[in-house]
Amino acid sequence: MSVGTTTKPKRRARGIPKQSFEPVGARLVVERDDADEVSPGGIVLPDQAQDKPRLGTVLAVGPGPRLHGGGRGEMQMKVGDRVLLSPYAENVILEGHEIVLAREEDILAIIRDG
Image 1: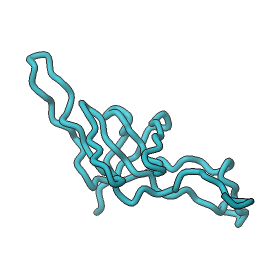
Image 2: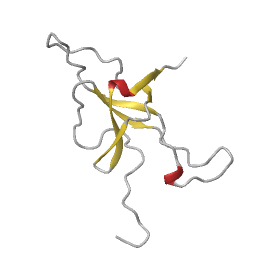
Image 3: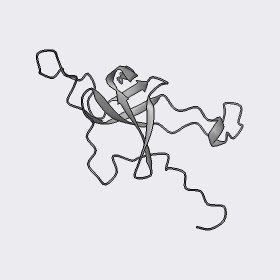
Image 4: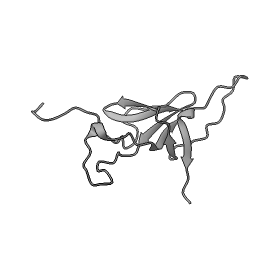
């Protein structure tokens, strides 16, 4: 490794990495939007000062919550939906890519166009 290089994770997953990644239960895999690197006043923000974006795109959806009768409930989100994430949604590093593995209740809203 040369001087001045870092090994921090890549910012955008660009889809699920090489391996198959399927969430279980009422969980989803979400790719966060890129963070703003410049403030509205034009100041360049370092990584530590950037807020985590709360908008993202659903990459994978689990089978749904288990019901008392043994069946599965239906998930409200589907792959490709734009969503608003709770600030408590957890980031996960997978093959060097940063993604969000969220519970269905971590999704505050589905964003629809028009």
